[in-house]
Amino acid sequence: PGSRTYVHPHTYEDPNQAIRDFAKEIDASSIRIERVIGAGEFGEVCSGRLKLPSKREICVAIKSLKAGYSEKQRRDFLSEASIMGQFDHPNIIRLEGVVTKCKLVMIITEFMENGSLDSFLRKHDGQFTMIQLVGMLRGIASGMKYLSDMNYVHRDLAARNILVNSNLVCKVSDFGLSRVLEDDPEAAYTTRVSTFCRKASKQILITNISSSVTGTVLVGMEVSQAWLKQNNFKFQVILYVHTSNPLTEVNCFKHETLYMLQKSGSQWSVAQLSPVQPLTHNSLSLNIHGGKIPIRWTAPEAIAYRKFTSASDVWSYGIVMWEVVSFGERPYWEMSNQDVIKAIDEGYRLPAPMDCPLVLHQLMLDCWEKARSDRPKFGQIVNILDKLIRNPSSLKQLTQSSACPFQMRPVKQDANAQDCLTVATLEEWLDAIKMGQYKENFSAAGYVTLESLIYLISSELNKIGITLPGHQKRILSSVQNFQTHGAHLQPIRSLR
Image (cartoon, rainbow, N blue to C red; front, side, top):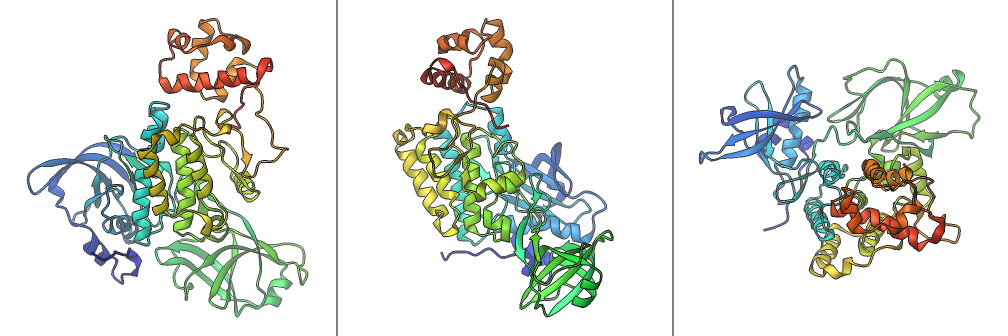
């Protein structure tokens, strides 16, 4: 069969037709809601049972639209089903159908017993082998290759948007159009410097600005350059508008701010206006705010210019790799979003997580190449991971920096790269290696100073109540690092 291509639901003149084309209508009487398992942007998420035509029942997840919804909210809610219904792959969350013919509108998907990947990994920290983790990564990459082949760009690939079933199969989820950028809990406003175009064919003072499913919605009045200068306004472009006629309707109002819409050729931009000192003729540089973006997972070109492509999804996949190998660690720890942007721009990349195979960290770095064209395709990533699964011995070589897991290192090492930072007490050390829950265990066993750790062995860990293999390995690896660096005992301090 020929390759299929994703169809954007908004290309339909009648949005309801997209639902009819891509999602099966389910009779509400065949659904039994059992318990609430979460909350989404539009309403509750529940687990329940779906009775199939064969009379067999299956476990399902049920997303429901909260009461009092508008027609636009209903359309936005169901758009996710219009997207999911086009996909058929073992590593993409499966749509069972929708309920649209009763007051309670629902989206029914397969039920993933272990929930989101990030929380699942944190809950089972250190309990999976590296080959199991690579298997998870291979599944995610396979799902993303499928989406890429269909010309679908996810834009919000992160461990929190991967679901895990009882067989440890990972599936890509979260295909809602309206919340990909604006309502993700990790999203943050972005900043970038650009140049204001004086030779615009139109300049319009915006009195209202909002978003809709068809794009950014603006209303305003035409003004002259002289009027703007006379009133001492500065320009701050906050977004670009990809629509031929943005002055159509208003869904919400922001009275506290004035905006200006400007068109140059086919490109519209929206500038935020505020009184400042009189402008000089050559001084119009400004900040572009492209909207809310999950900074830590997003490629530099997507942050700066909103260029979302399969290559930007590959960057995000590299971050997911890091999340998986670190068992759900937060990317860049507690660095601010602006510090993350600055560090990436200066060439810094996340270091290898503890016990990370060299080949995996190199693949992460390949995904984080600044030039989009230099990043691997998802098909190549799948092939690389397949080879690792067939040849597990290639995972045995660890990165040199894996003994120093929390250090930010530049991609290109130089002589000035800092050594691992030091900690002063045993308690600080345990916090640094994320084993702070064992402080009382160490204290009760008589380990109260860093020096006392020199002779710690694995059998002793069992005696003091540390039995998880992954946790033992993490502690002993750090202790070995002490021994390697001699009597000065310089364990690692977390950047968090």
